Image (cartoon, rainbow, N blue to C red):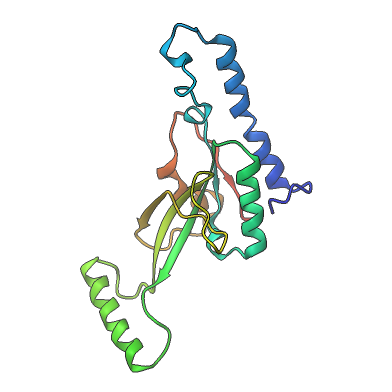
Length: 181
């Protein structure tokens, strides 16, 4: 979906990321040389603008989609960030004795963590960006990981699909786009 071949998401994100160089040009034209902000290591347009993509299915991407996502991170500015939903199964799905013991231990841990006993998974909202290290399987290690109280997608459309990304937003304005195309 991020292959630069007339794909809607790539064009939308690339267009939104043009704010980054526009802010840099604005700064270059209006900066005052005697100001502390004029130092080369102080100003960063990514501090003023963030392009956040809510990409819930990043966890289930295959190698091709992961490489395309990494390509998008490499080609677009530092202001690009991706929020996705991560999950772990609480209980093993097999019937052997060792797995049953692990399941009992997981149930006890879930009780301590106040996870509902019928909740089979734990969910996290994660944030990745260009600076996150790439693992051998081409996934990026999350910069932030916030545990969610349950399954975050309630079924009311795009607004619910993007709510998990809200804790990572900064600034006065936000414009969300949905990457599940």
